[in-house]
Length: 150
Image 1 (cartoon, rainbow, N blue to C red):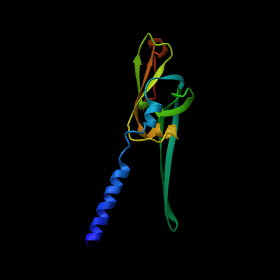
Image 2 (image 1 turned 30 degrees about the horizontal axis):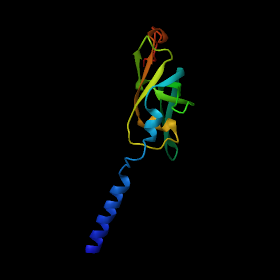
Image 3 (image 1 turned 90 degrees about the vertical axis):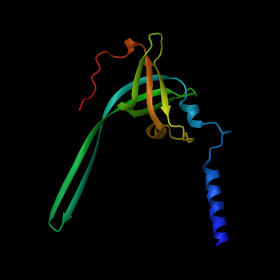
């Protein structure tokens, strides 16, 4: 019994140490997302998602379905290594700040800092980004914005 208890405690300690972040390692996602990034080509795309379900018993049956339309913003932003990433986020995650001294519009990300894998930028944006802030001149942002109102 003592061996089993010691084994479980040892296993628990190994799991705890393995899950702890190494403070000497740089935060890879932070290196990609931190700071301001130049923003290029931004537009809203209406995307439809749908699902159907069917049930049948002998000769009786039913089919039901639903569809949902969402507004996603597609945009290109310059990463810290100078390359541009083409990304997409829901419209609800965007905030706008006006600065009339701003030359090229920029984007800043607010993200959860619990991820180090930067192999899939879109997955990071989908799962880790809380919101983004676009900073631009007031003249660069259209005054008569017509959003999809459902």
